Length: 149
Image (cartoon, rainbow, N blue to C red; front, side, top):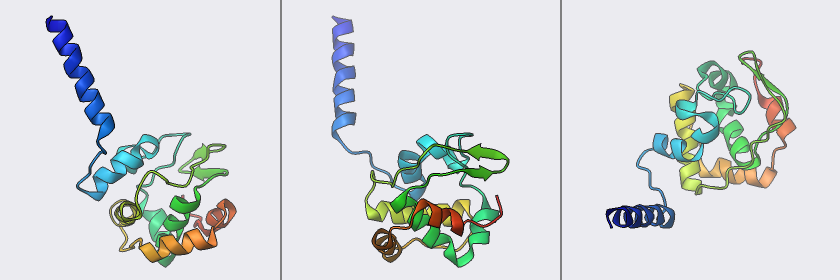
């Protein structure tokens, strides 16, 4: 009987977790929910899978183009050969981010730019809209990348 009660409780908990959306209080929590599966907690990356995002020199080298770049990546995705800090990223495709609202994308992108990138960059709804309208290609986005890895 005790086992049945425990199993029933576990099933009820699992159903509740599947039924209700995950809520996040901070941009960092949003990143953990939507991005960390690939880019790892804190944006430290997963070798061979997804590059680290906690590279201030990269974001700073993008300068005022950093918000435009991140808007392009989250709306168009990214694919192609990248060498970052001596690690090759080949063949894996980051799809456009579809699991968030635009408000969440703005919060996550701004958090990446300011916290991981140590810039004053801000991702805006206008930049997201422009990126969706212009649809930068992966080649366009790779061409924006500075030589800093």
